Length: 372
Ligand code: GLY
Image 1: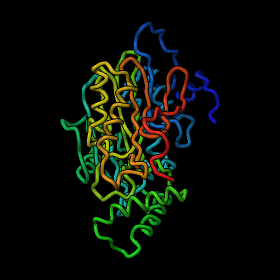
Image 2 (image 1 turned 90 degrees about the horizontal axis):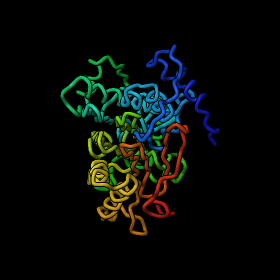
Image 3 (image 1 turned 45 degrees about the vertical axis):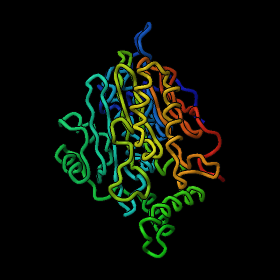
Image 4 (image 1 turned 120 degrees about the vertical axis):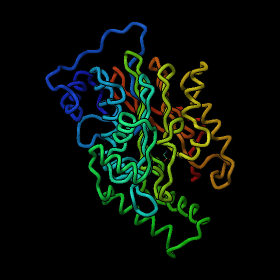
């Protein structure tokens, strides 16, 4: 259980903690200005945004909110927040120690969008850099492009001064990969058609056996924020689908799928089965539905209904004929209205003036994605 949140402790810790390098240390934490009718500053994220601290005192949403409240650039604050999760090997779905692909290589995806500047950047299939969100931000800041991939994304990162490591596995992620390999490939080779089904089945059996967090097969962090000036930004970062075919890119680095921001409307980002989200560009859809007047939660539920309607292949259905995977959206209206929605019950993180907390999502479907 988290202890009740003390705003003064939180801001003091924020100034002294991970964010200190990016903040003038001598500046005292400032109380937010009194606002009348303007946007309510808030940060929303997937639930891992209020879980991992990388040995510090603040979670992602707490760090991002504190930096935002000190007047920092909203995207910079969000990226500093997700860096905590990327660097923390305890989250095996993001950054360093993320679950690797089918060849045992950690390949990372990320994108970010800056509402006020109307700029974006992304990287996909990036190897060797613990913080792909920082590289996505560098693509946004230093290039005319929106997406760099693979070895050339890594070369770009090296040119930008990032440290490139030979291997981002930890002993945990490597041992989970070995176990997956043992389950999926007992005879060394399966024909490709059987292999993807066997891969999913092996992953799910590891979830059932308690070796993997079910949310981490497609695990990701998305984090979106709006400050008192109504500046909306977002970032998504992931190691993608565990044991994916090398080169597979999911929804996370794709603008409109894993993330979409429109400064006048709000932001939406996702975790869960990327293929289901990519098919309908759900984050873009959610923002467009909000533009037409839907509340964040209602816009998210409509996107989930479309995902359900588009899921017709038997291999993707459980015994009840419903999707056998989860997808969740973390949505923010430009005035600061947050909503977390998902196909099946999940959780999301939020931080505002009341402090960081983890809340249940609104679920479209009852029960679990996988039948017991
Ligand atoms: N949503 C993360 C992925 O599918 O890669």
